[in-house]
Image 1 (cartoon, rainbow, N blue to C red):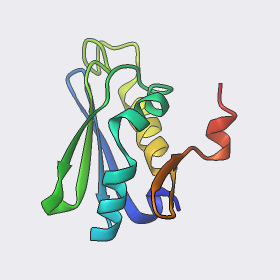
Image 2 (cartoon, rainbow, N blue to C red):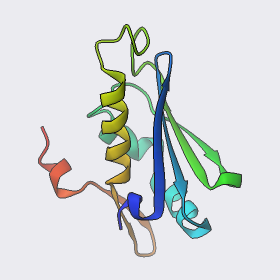
Image 3 (cartoon, rainbow, N blue to C red):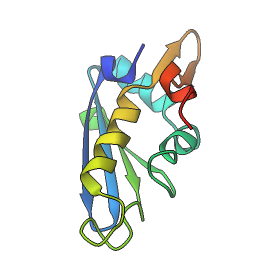
Image 4 (tube, rainbow, N blue to C red):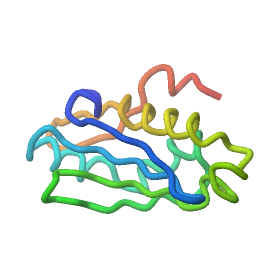
Length: 118
């Protein structure tokens, strides 16, 4: 199943940080996302679009995960050579388009078009 099938997403920026949030449709989806979407698993995929560390914050009362990418937009959105809006859309699309398999354990699996990306 795709992350986008069980969660809604939002992207934003503050200064040089990119903020990606996912809100699960229900508690079971939230638990699956928490298990599957670890910073260690996501960093290699997100770093294809946005360089730097990936920090994750859990917001269980909202069934949300917040991913913060510090230094994603060096100098801030207006000074950065990385166009903020385009990076935001690419990064949140990347998260929403990920596939998660739920067969006893959760696995993060990029879709075919990600595997063929340079």
